[in-house]
Length: 309
Image (tube, rainbow, N blue to C red; front, side, top):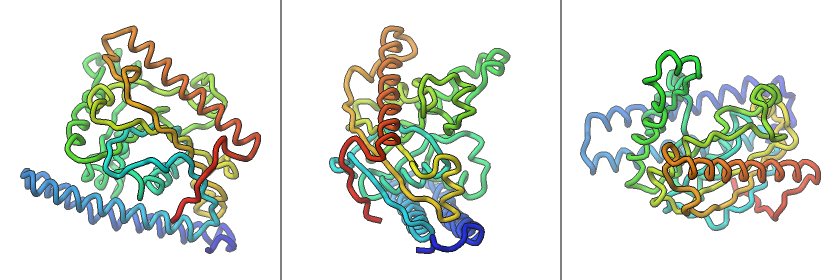
């Protein structure tokens, strides 16, 4: 544990190690993606996918070790007892920090299949990160503003088509598909800009997960609703972590059933669309209340387990 060292000293050291870890596994996994293009045989695809999972697990394990090396973290995780690595899950979560992806990966590491994140299209150009995620078949979503869609209406639904194509790849092996349904990280400015009705969350976007459920709903075993909170680091969570100031990571997990309430034709059935949006908004309202309860009482609504890492 190096958290006792000054933050200004830890920052360049920790940042360098996290960057090196990303670069290492990005370099290792990228050739696997190229081989998948060159060897379109089922046996080769399975072997390469297994190797890719190993690289992802290695990246996650080193990230977790580095977080614990530079910080004295109290990991509080609840609701993970019934999870299974041989199942298919759709995981939805609020989005607070760049640190959310390593945190979700850490919690998933020994509990559920390796996650596939829906990523912003711009991230594919980042060195190591973009090529690594491409090699691991993670879908990149390109969202268009209303102004762009008004000029080019043929782009409407393009991100949904990307979702459909990506989901086809995930039907053969147990998979966790993850979507930060707010679409961006929560900040006070974004809350005002988006006129959010929630205190600690941005409004959720329903289209992407509705289409994922329509494409793979019968194959999912459950929906996992993750609520992430860093109660002692309300502002710059990732920066605080790099400076050894991350104190607590709270992850509350709810396992939700796959039923007719969440599977339907979101884009053509107006009644189902209204029902699904109401369902998701109710989930977000409950999540907002959960965050408020924790911050007011400094304790979760239910017992937690100590995360071994």
